[in-house]
Amino acid sequence: MSIYPAKESDNCVSQFVLQHLYSTGNTSESLDQPSDIVYLGNHTYIISDTNNHCLKLLELALVRLTTYAGKCGVHTMTETDTKEDDTLHYPKGLSYSREREMLYVVSSSLVQTVDKEKKIKIFCRSEFTLSSAFLAGDFLLISYKHGVNVIDLDTTDTVKIGAGNSSGLANGRFNIARFCNPHGLVVVSNMVAFVADSDNGVIRLIDFQLKKVTTVCNSIGVLENRRKSIAKCKLEQPWAILLVNDSLYVGNNAGIYTSTIKGVS
Image 1: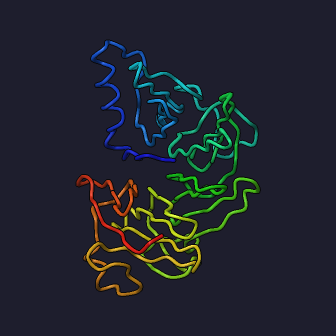
Image 2: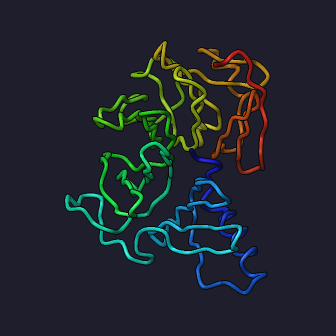
């Protein structure tokens, strides 16, 4: 699962890694606009090195950063290619399935997979530019400019959450709800997910049982259509999101925001 997607312009993963490696003199590898990071276990991480078009392996115990998959600096794959390739196209969001031993990589308007042999394949495509990924059982949630797609890993059947080709801020059923450039997301259970709706500056709640989207506010609770109250819920471009017990941690331009969420399971 995604631990904490870094906002690309902050380059915070890059700064942490390079500072750590610089102290040992090991600077043979570098990062260019890292976007996401997943934990594999045993102090080992995979980082999506977006502008280098590859994935990097970070081994903290060895203080080492190396290329994991893709060809750094090379991206012959394009968004419209139909052939398989061993390169990645601006990799961003990452999610890892231990059961399938598979990495799912959001690359522009592609979702690609990287297996345990580091072989790269096209999993599915989108007509929109994709942002973040979150794996929940046999389903992959992908955020994009106008909403969230839920993809079945076995069939690639997709449930679309969001009103098609337009952005905005609207609550309601899946086909009428509107988002504006959502990024980080986290699944609480089979029934509920939270989404950092970045350009709207709010946190959204997706209820899969009711097939409905609402807006979450720390001081008010869950909003339905009380639009006058939404201003009180605004954050400065929330980007990354993580849930620990009842605490929701949101990374935004101002730092890390914490909200207590109760009664959601």
